[in-house]
Image (cartoon, rainbow, N blue to C red):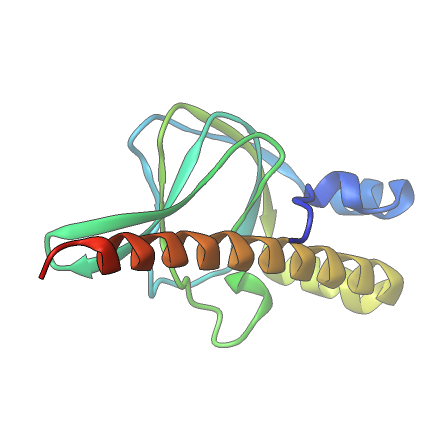
Length: 151
């Protein structure tokens, strides 16, 4: 299994400092919907404190939490990939403080500084690989539980 990494600590110091020049401090009160699946993905966050649930709407009245993120975690990667739409929804599980980054500005910085761009993409890829492995494990557990139930 891949190790969980934190975006800001994964970047070399000079690249982290350049990225942080674009950061804006924001906060979200508990129960605030941060973004909705299908919406325009033009930013991302690094959580400073609090917790965020990523969710998926499975019916018109039911959402399933697919991940819980906390301090140091990356929230949002859809800003990096066309068609730049959120794949999941997100809601603040508690009061959240975060660094917010404007996606187009970060992409422009990546074009200007290809080494930063490569480091950023690699770090995001590692984060996604880890989350995919966690999700796979959860699905396998759910499948195993479902197979044991009486017919």
